[in-house]
Image (cartoon, rainbow, N blue to C red; front, side, top):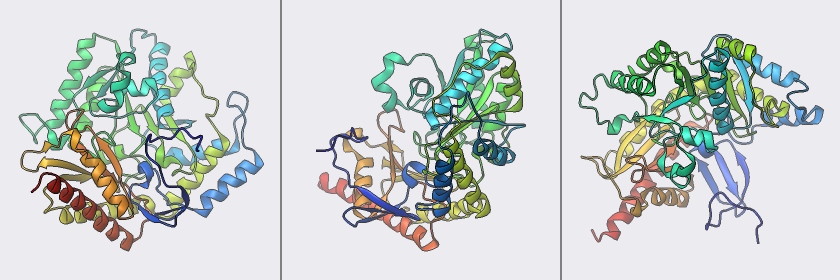
Length: 445
């Protein structure tokens, strides 16, 4: 009997024993092509000896000191090497243990910034529906992903949510023209409805991750939203937990639109799965302002030396190996080949993404984008079919209306080989076809 409280209840999971490159092997000798990099985490591949050696060296020399007592060479060196790549002036890096902690840090930092400026009424956070920012209570409150919020709704009532940015299901009458301006107008209305000087920050994913499956905003979105935030004194928080560190084919997804956020949060690819590392990054102006008033916040394992060593080793692999550029070029190929392979599928409604971050939305009717009812469990069918084919994909549900709406995501390591990428497309298309056949059989058609 296992004494582990598992992530997935009621299901016996295989035991993973080793990983190499884009592959994972279980204790029964089965091999799986890691088409999703876990949860779009693994960017430099499994079993990287350089990263493992950097972690072992730092742990052997100095594993832990408390962040209020010491800084370390590892943390200072990592922040120094990362700073020139960050899309902000004079950035200051606050390392934590994951994306949810990074978002919690960012929300508190926004509040501390306004307090230091004497704007004590600024406490409201604005976020978007169809978003995901983490599973701690504050991050979950900011999230607009209904299936994850629903059990905890009595605790969640602080964040103001504006409409999701989901071009495949955009309800705006002028779509696809001027969608960005319309979203910016909706944000401005939400800010004004809260009253002058009450909104602290707007938090959003540059490209929506798990909640909407690699939903890319219209090109006029970020400039319009950034202008609204600046005009109303609202801090812009870019949630790059899933999109950061090359996942979309640039170091950070905001780079695609020239966005300069006040605060940026990252995780997942920051350490490529080798260490639980998250980052909250403040612009120099935000840091200097908060320094004058103090920041009441902290975690036992923030500013961890081994985490910094892991992050620095992954950063060097990404930079020296040209892996961010590889994510961009392979991502273009992945999307093109997926669209071709799924063109005749009756249930593949949309294939979208940027870089090696791709989403496939599964629908009952491609003409109307009508979603399957949740009872059909279409996402689960595709995930199971993929596993039978030796492929791992990342699932999500509720993308259409908070309950219905099925999708799977792909986000393989940037080190995936050319032939392996072709195999990823073939196995994905096969899994979708298997699910399609199973649905048809269930209906007797």
